[in-house]
Length: 185
Ligand SMILES: [Fe+2]
Image: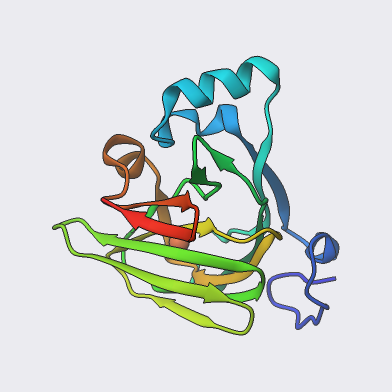
């Protein structure tokens, strides 16, 4: 189903978007994002044994010249690397375009930052809507024992900037502690 100009309707679930034209699947493993975790000794030790999946997503990314909406479904696996929870790479949007996240399953933290140093954290839990205005870089972190699954919908005008995050990271990280997750600087 689903040329960009045709209406369509699907049940939400991992794998469910694959029936839609233009949707592609991506798997991010630790080797794809090893520089993003703080504990590089832990990264090396885990990669010596294997290459775990950190998250996967199915998405339809429309051309950035397009005024329609792009969308995707992401599942972050449960786990930690040197105590730091599994997370997405994170990115900024180039050009003007907002995004919404709707959490469907699990427990997470959404880390946000602006290019001029403002920062924010919000909670992701089943049934919550998180609104990400243009200018706020964003990364989702799974702090639960189950998969963190969320729907995202963003402006077709958006082009993704992953390089800025790869270079400077996020000002805060989310770490597993005896009493639960803590956000550290
Ligand atoms: Fe985004």
